[in-house]
Structure formats: structure tokens, C-alpha cells
Amino acid sequence: PPDRIVHDAGLNFNSKELRQHAGIFSILVKEVPVESHKSVVKIERYHVPLKRAYEIIKDELKNELQNEPITKDMILQMPLKL
Image 1 (cartoon, rainbow, N blue to C red):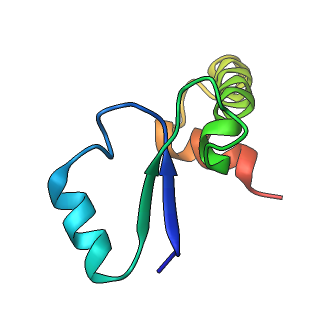
Image 2: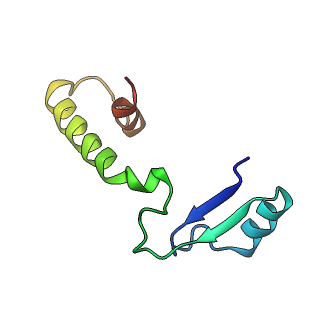
């Protein structure tokens, strides 16, 4: 498990139950202000570029592959595959 979980001031990680379970594994849960985006985990930093890549791929596939079913999950995985 990770040593710490750093999150913004949203409600997703702000629960007593999460902090109790994290404490069992000696994981520090730290809330940082929204303005300190350098402190927030990598996933949140890469959200905008990934969303942009998703939109581009979705638009390109909409025109090319109308007959083949492509799910949103498949499109989301495409920018991550090298």
C-alpha cells in the first residue's frame, strides 16, 4: 500500500471510514487546498490532457467506425496504450 494519500478538498476522500482504514495500514491521509495543484496526485494533473485525447479519439472514431461497437472504456484506454 502507499505511504500516503494526498487529495484535494473534495468529498471523495473526506470520510471518517477512509481515514480509519488508512490508519490500520499506517497510511497518512492528507488534504491539500485546491490551489496547490502541484501537491495533488498524478491522476488529477493528467486529467485535462487525457480528457482532450479521449475527445479527439472519440470524434475520429465516430466518423470512421460507425458500424463497429466501440465502448467508452475502449476509447479511454486508447490514449494510454503505447
